[in-house]
Image (cartoon, rainbow over all chains, first blue to last red; front, side, top):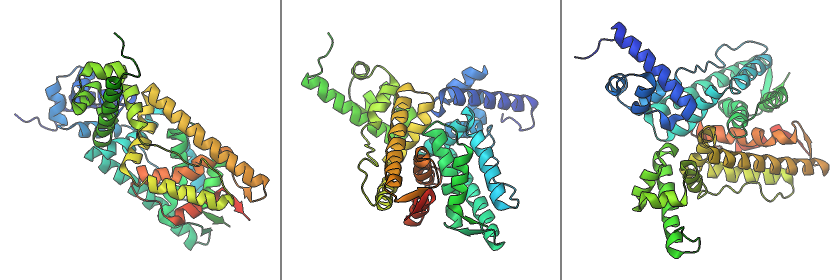
Length: 188
Length: 188
């Protein structure tokens, strides 16, 4: 008998599995997020885990979804100040282990797992689109002469923070953020 | 009896294991690089794999070492032209699957595996040091007024290429490289 989505036991086991999958991901990495390991961590039968998420990549995507990444979603003016604020928020998020885990898992595991890759592609398109729109609007308002194409702004602005956090394993300070923002264009 | 490092059979099996580990890494990702899987791929006894690399992270590090990453190693003047050339070479390397695999594995797997983390730290320090030295020298020669601290140049210059390749899964063109280089300072 197929479980019903509104069955309280079904929802409870789903929550327990997501919590366990998150713990396994943060402690041991994406390669450890298997049905067997998550079932053991949750104290739930392996078959139950399979019933909720038949594939490993779906299970991993569910674990990753527990770390929200809401960046650049409400542009404000002056755009330069808004950009500095948003990049500072992102830099402070990237100081945390769980955000680094999700960022590196998005980049790495996406090379082999379709569900993770779809998640990576959605996030990349979302961030690139939001930054491009905000910079286009700033240019239209005469706030900035852009040095780069708006579609490249995400790579130019987020890339240094992401590299600092995940390859250099360090923190991004305000000087780097100022250099990033001023690298995008000449602000008036 | 412990094998001797110069025993031809020992060296042959070592080579077969590294080749197999590289294939598993590039095809299935770092989580798949286990003694069992690599032994199967190489057609070699699992015990032999353990004899060469007792730990999984050492095995993975050996597989990653098959993808060389020799960047920014011989500064030339004018420094701006050299930087553009080096970043272009790096961008073209990051178009390849195997380089993306190693870059994302360095960032991700390093969060859980000591040998990979040591490799990540060495590469990060090497790149940051080389770029800082080249920019300091360029400043001393009067080639550039830097907008950022030399130690931040690696994050500012490599970060956008790394983000483009691993999060946006795209290619870095010459406009982005020009924006990156001109973001580092005012070149004369």
